[in-house]
Image (tube, rainbow, N blue to C red; front, side, top):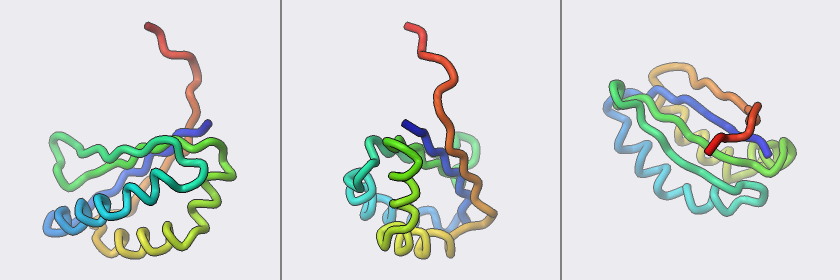
Length: 99
C-alpha cells in the first residue's frame, strides 16, 4: 500500500468552489479501483491550504487513477483555483504504529 499526500494552496476566494468540487467528487474517487481511503485536511492557521490524504493498493492503482478521465476532469477544475504550486508525496509507512 502507498499513501498519497497532496498539498494545495488556493486563492482565498476559491475555497468554497474547491470544497464544493471535492464534495461532489469524493465518492467517485473513494470508489475508484485501488483507492481504499480518502480524506481532506485543512491547515489550521492557513484556511486556504488543503491536503488530500489517500491510500492506494499499489503504485499502479494510483497511476491508473492519475490517467483516468475522473482525475483529468477533477484536476482541471481544481488547478485553476490555485494560488501556488501544488506539492505531492507518495509515501509508505517506515515503521509499524505503536499502540
